[in-house]
Image 1 (cartoon, one colour):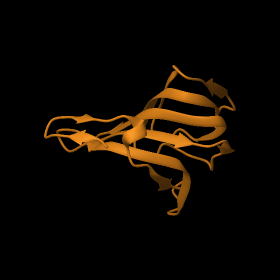
Image 2 (cartoon, rainbow, N blue to C red):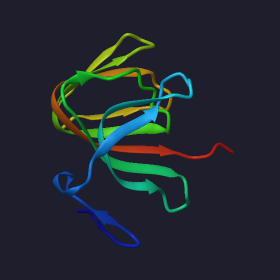
Image 3 (cartoon, rainbow, N blue to C red):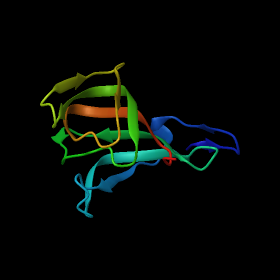
Image 4 (tube, one colour):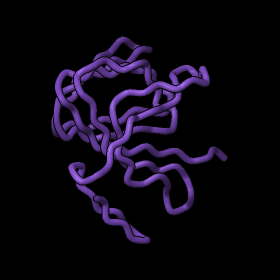
Length: 129
């Protein structure tokens, strides 16, 4: 279980509670999609801006289209292997343990998970002026 105080959170993925990861469908359809599981450690920054930190995991499968709807997304691969297809360019990026990635908000992609997979992810967004 995560240890929380007013200033910090300390957790290990094996001790956190995972729930199904539900997110807005790509393209702003108003619907929702679900893929993998997430254990959120933090939801916002000190100033109230969106700042999500979480562990995310999935078994082998291919995701629905995903467009990082909440903000810029960066992550660190803890275990497993995945290929991320960037839909707008057709580029495919292979991710393995120890790799870091970062996608801007709105990047349209599809994740193919090749083996049991886990990442630590940070999503950040702030209001535009």
